[in-house]
Image (tube, rainbow, N blue to C red):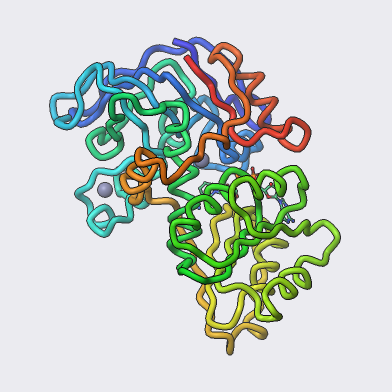
Amino acid sequence: MKALVYVGPNKKAFEERPKPALLAPTDAIVKITRTTICGTDLHILKGDVPSCQPGRILGHEGVGIVDLAGPAVTAFKPGDRVLISCVSACGKCDFCRRLMYSHCTTGGWILGNTIDGTQADFVRIPHADMSLYAIPEGADEEALVLFSDILPTGHECGVLNGRVLPGATVAIVGAGPIGLAALLTAQFYSPAAIIMIDLDQGRLEDSRRFGATATVNSSDGSAVAAVMKLTGGLGVDTAIEAVGIPATFELCQQIVAAGGTLANIGVHGCKVDLHLELLWDRNISITTRLVDTVSTPMLLRTFHAKKLQPKELITHRFPFARILDAYDTFSNAAKTHALKVLIEA
Ligand SMILES: NC(=O)c1ccc[n+]([C@@H]2O[C@H](COP(=O)([O-])OP(=O)(O)OC[C@H]3O[C@@H](n4cnc5c(N)ncnc54)[C@H](O)[C@@H]3O)[C@@H](O)[C@H]2O)c1
Ligand SMILES: [Zn+2]
Ligand SMILES: [Zn+2]
């Protein structure tokens, strides 16, 4: 089969690999019909994710058809159409029983990280019963790739952890796919205002289409003043960090209102200052989280009921044979205006 392989820092290859086999009775082999590329795949390619070693097939998002199911898989059989979760979960360990699938002792975020991933013709899915979701007849499979990672991430790490409430004010720093997924899912809870903050004017314009009530371009350094003006000098009840750099985590500290919540989503590669000297008396909470994908079934129900319409996040489409072009397009988002690139078998 063909697969996109991480060869080493700044090196990837589209090469021939053996088809995966079942390794445990709880595994399934899934034939991939659609996959996509995540910002995290680009982090891996830069060499930022040491757990992902050279030789690894990348990808932790996708939909497909069950090709083989191990003897202990009871929820799925060959021929079933399935959504693949970016997080694998045994459902039985102490962390899984606490709904922290991301910390499953024999799972978590392993796909396209410590085991081979979804940017291939076939993938092995461990703990298949808990890590796959059935796709109902007639569902729009294109949009479903957005449910493997970005929608549960924006919803769980940003919106749920950030305690977005009816009538509240929200700011989301970073209007990439994850920030936009937080923007879409925040609207379930009817906040009064959602302010999107980014450096990229194109992405801010996209945000308006996805429901932002205001946008702030932070490239001129006046983002704090702009947010204060929009919130009557109070700051926001929920500040969501969806970039993963010190400047944006510090911006969130400056715009969170007294009593508010700073919900971090970004993957941080270096240390960040926490200004407790300014925040100790502000009654704020700071949260961090690796996506657990526990809200995926709820998100899928809202999608099937047409309450969540994320499909416009897909800006480009490529056949699997052109996955290297898909990477080029996705890594040059400022020029290509790419949000999510769909890769189809
Ligand atoms: N916690 C989790 O489980 C989890 C899961 C998936 C992704 N992530 C992380 O979420 C973050 C966002 O992911 P993404 O795919 O949307 O990334 P992305 O790179 O596509 O988007 C980031 C956005 O931030 C903007 N930006 C950069 N610097 C900025 C600044 N100084 N001020 C304002 N905006 C700025 C960029 O213009 C871009 O639009 C990444 O760090 C990613 O690794 C976390
Ligand atoms: Zn991802
Ligand atoms: Zn577990």
